Length: 192
Length: 91
Image 1 (cartoon, rainbow over the protein chains, first blue to last red):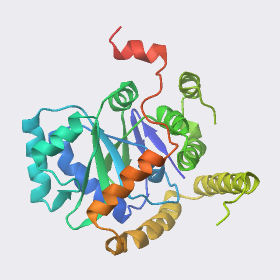
Image 2 (image 1 turned 90 degrees about the vertical axis):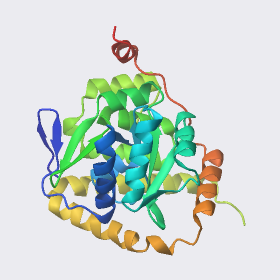
Image 3 (image 1 turned 180 degrees about the vertical axis):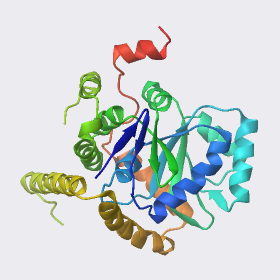
């Protein structure tokens, strides 16, 4: 694996995009017209080569007002996407404001899907404010900082989360701020 | 059915961790073109079968909610380092 860093950007030159990556890119192209986002959780490990697929990709967006959400919702529907939650745009917005996620997929094909949530706590906010542009095949993926991602996955505690954290730490070790990672470990009361 | 004992589960955990480390080692040792080709072949084969999922949308959402409620995965948010909390508050 070759990871290249240029100022604040990370490049994975020559990495092939899978159908899952293309699905995510296409959705993010639309979302980016309306709001910023950050990718969190398992898909970050997949972007860096973890040998697994996923049914859902988790992204966080900042709180927005309902008029902006309706515009985003409408454009997604015009582009042949749909929300799994059986709600109209007002109902979906209400789910988001309650702190839960809404799931977006290609019409009539609910796997894979993208779970969208509003930024709602300090760790979400840190991931969002410090998101990192990961460039693959000229596509931008804004990902959560690796240090919090690794520590947070360990904190979540399922076997899959710990394996994702371990993988991510192993393959990105040259690019991790070890002091910052230790700070997260200590604060989250975890250790790999 | 008798569930596997703790010793056996621990062995499975260790084997999986071993595999993750070996896989990470291999990913680090080959060019991006190589690991990503293998990865995308694997993911694409699952992607092509995405419409064969034997559940309806409603059943799928119910499955996720049930799995989440039964999961021993932590919920909520861990406590952030003080230094970064202060930064977020603009101090």
